[in-house]
Length: 79
Image 1 (cartoon, rainbow, N blue to C red):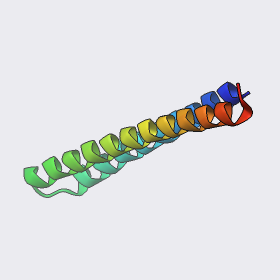
Image 2: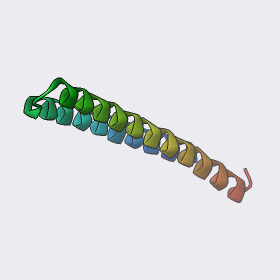
Image 3: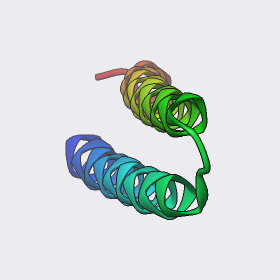
Image 4: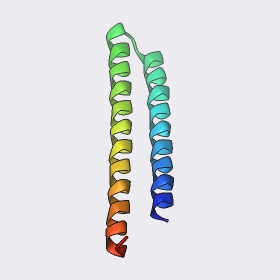
């Protein structure tokens, strides 16, 4: 049962991460269209990369939390 909960939570974390990465890419494109210089375009790309990295970190943290919750539930039930 806990394994299914962990799996579902991991799928949710992956979906949220993917959505955040997609939003970062779309926002970068909008910022590049509004940019007046090559420097502004480069900054937009760097911000996108940072947001993507943050989304991946949040996903990994959620996976670790889900695994810990599964382990805690396993220990509390004595299995």
